Image 1 (tube, rainbow, N blue to C red):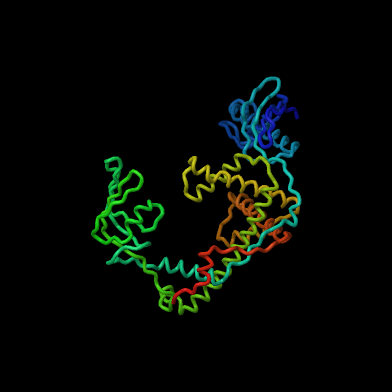
Image 2: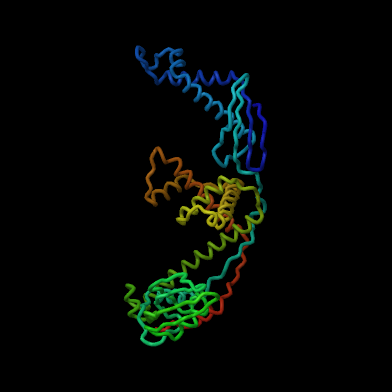
Length: 404
């Protein structure tokens, strides 16, 4: 095969290939035979149409398909010879016909890279958080979700909610005017001057506060507070449990499982961080973009500069980590039986047919192989346990009995 590399980067290639024109004639003859088998023309039975009539009638179609087959043949031969793994569909840049057929294509490939010393990775395993901390945190969250908002007849305090008509003056001009604005006293999204002014206000009062060059004119319409329920038998029954003891027993089991899952996920993240730090290569842009597009679609986000700044690096790391896992799977002969894949697909209630079978099985094989590779690394890693230091607030919450 006669070719020249016009661009030869780690993950991007441009190749010019020269092919004897006689080879195109061979492909055109082959394509003519294929068409002749399935074509009928007035006066001739199917499969009996003279070759010259086929060549004349379908000249453009025959040539286009023959060129496509010719290019595909040499593309596959190039991949085989260079041992390249394509990262995106090949792009045909141009094609010229003369004494030789010359065509130029652009390829994006997975760069060649090595992974070494991946058995016995140092893996950090976090010790479970104190059960009493998890229990109190969960119960307090449940109390928050079940809280009632009721109006306060006296003065407003920190964490109360104040509903007001708000006018903002700047440079003696009304910058904005809104009705029924609700502010939680102590919310740091608002200037401290407003929070301080609102402490002690009552329904019907008018207050002003100045912050920087803005004056805030506030007509208080309502003061409300959040009332948290007690954690008692009535609370448990309202949630559908027979008793508070039953609720706590169920929470204990759920929290233990959730904590085990969290710790395992943290260990997997530890593996990812180590491998990403050790194994660096130029990740194909098309693969990063595909992952990025999937991420913003799952999060229902627009494709904007701000979104790209937030998610592009994350997408690059995910792609690179998956490629590293794929390499380790090959090195250690990690594979998934098709029966396992079919069992999972059946369990998920998915249906296979002739059109989607190969794509779906390939998709799940890739995911399941990567998961099995991570488990392989966990099993063969050097695990170090460490406890997480609770913040003062977390520690206080863990030592405080929930009122009931």
